[in-house]
Image (cartoon, rainbow, N blue to C red):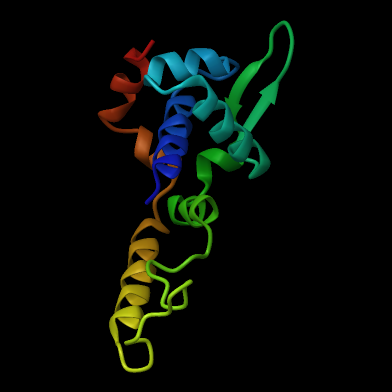
Length: 140
């Protein structure tokens, strides 16, 4: 999993524990999570594009998790953030000489699918409803 996906998941989790009607700015999220502002802004833009986060500008603005964001499957979200690339590429600038007979690519594809499948039943709300919630709320 890329650092970008990890960061986006952590931002999502932080927003998930806000009280109804409360919001945070991108700067507040970046500072609370100890993440560079530019990286946070890029993750939030992607999450907004996916419908996970709602961002309002101006006075009274800020970031909130959408209802879809609360119930979204973590497996779906990770797939969207990671893209559809395989774990390994056999056809690169210099193609792998084993590609015609190697079973590693298929084994890694199956492992990747199992990884996503294990995340599919988990939602953002489930990740933040246990002992994680107080820790996330304490970040400021």
